[in-house]
Structures are given as C-alpha cells and as structure tokens.
Length: 116
Image 1 (tube, rainbow, N blue to C red):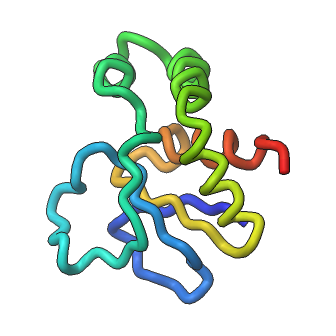
Image 2 (image 1 turned 45 degrees about the horizontal axis):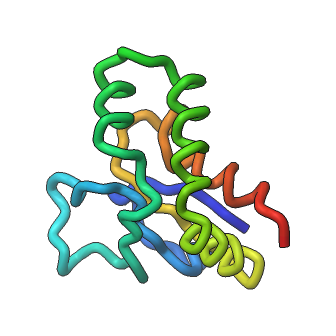
C-alpha cells in the first residue's frame, strides 16, 4: 500500500515506512522533529521541472509526463521503494500545499505501476 501525506500531518501507526520525497527540506520543520525513515532526493523532480510547474509554465499533465520520464532514469530507487510497498505500508511525505496535484501523487502512481 502506498499513501501520500503532507509532512505537517501527524504520524500514524498505519504509515509504515516513511520517505521524504522533496528535494528541499520542508519549511518550518526541524530535522530533529520529522519522523521519517529516509530522504530520497534521487527520485524528486529535477529543479528545472519543479520550477516550471510551480511557476505555471507547464500544466500538471505535462509535469506528470515529464516527471515519469525522470523517474524512469532512477530504476534502482523506484524499484526498491515499490518492493517496500509490496511488503507493507509506504508513506510518501511531501510539503506541497496542493494535495490534489503534486509530485508525490505522480510518484505513488508510478510506483504502483512497476512490475513485480
């Protein structure tokens, strides 16, 4: 099971393995206070892609397509996280305000689609 959760939400027993999937450390969160198992920067959107999306140069559909292309270049990390999700709960932590259109949702969908 893969779920996405903002870093500002409370920790839950059902979170399982918690992975921060933002390239930048979340604002207002002390490193000593965030409960996470790993910070996986390798599978975050490139700075160029992130900036293009946040400045509305590209729409979410275009962002998603380009991000999936970037994710395909990180097979080791994506397969490893997909395997963790097959064994138990995996929570992707992100800081974005938009809970309906963000990179963690694209990543979760990508990981769900990887073959066993």
